[in-house]
Structures are given as structure tokens and as C-alpha cells.
Image (cartoon, rainbow, N blue to C red; front, top):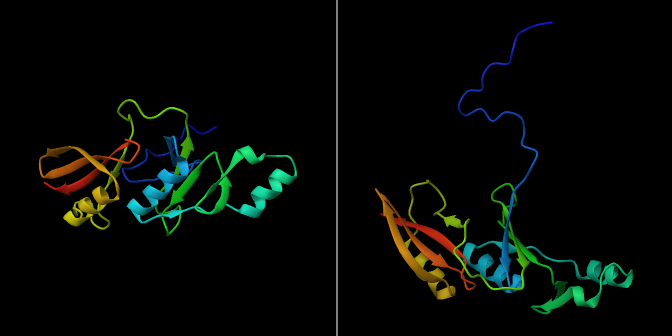
Amino acid sequence: MSNETSPEPRPGDRGPAAPYTVQVAIDTTDPHALADWWAEALGWVVEPQDESFIRSMIAQGYATEEDTIVHNGALVWRAGAAIRHPDGLDVAPRLLFQPVPEPKTVKNRVHLDLRAAGEPATPPDPAELDRLLALGARELSRGRQGPHGWVVLADPEGNEFCVSVAG
């Protein structure tokens, strides 16, 4: 038997592939409306739901009409909606909006940070902040640490998120 061990990983080594992918789940009282809002805010796409599959599940007794709603003229599952980056899940994690009966009451323990695409230090165009506010975001506060600045906003249901800005 050999006493040899594997060499210590070096910084930057990724090691074996991770066994998980990540999606971010967001609690909401109206999953489809909030998914639409975030898709517009991020320039992402709402994942389509297959109406014929939904009808088939109802016909076979696996679901009921109460499990569905009509949203934007289409039959969809009541239990949630999801959005993703238009270039796929390899670019960014999927956002899943799931229904909860109660509205948000306290500060989020986890939130999204939005940065301009490109170099990590590239601040977004100031018009981007105005666009998010025009979509229905609310400004909550501003912060700065050294050369880095951010604005804390809330989506229409009050979920906080940050947008990087020029320091």
C-alpha cells in the first residue's frame, strides 16, 4: 500500500465537477407578475409553460383546474414561474418565483446584486437606474465602500436588490 496522497489543490483549480446546479427561489404573492417584472428588468425570458401538457395532466387526474391560472392569455401552473438568461442556464442561474400566502415583512437575508455586463468594475449607465425605477422599483438607500458604490432598490413586492453604480 502506498502512503502517497494527492497534491494539495492550487488556487484557481476547480477540481471535480460540482454535483449541483443553482437556481434562486424567490417567495412572492404573485409569481407570474413578479417573474414578468424581473424578466423585463434583467432582459431575461420567462420560461414557457406547455399548455397542452398542463391540460393532459388535468385530463389524467394528476392535476386539477385549481392548480392552474390564466396569465397573459395562457394556461399556466399556479405554483410558480421561472425566468432565465436568454443565452441559457450556463450564463446565469434560473430565478424561480414561488407562491407564498403572506407578503414580505422583513429585510431579505439574501438578495441579487446587479452589475453591468463586461468588466467587473464597469458601472451601469445611469439611465439604467432610471429605467428600473420607471419599471416600478423603489429606491431604498445608497452605499459606498472605497471606489465602489451601489443603490439598494426594492422590486414591486419589496424584495431588495442592489445595483452597482460609479463610486
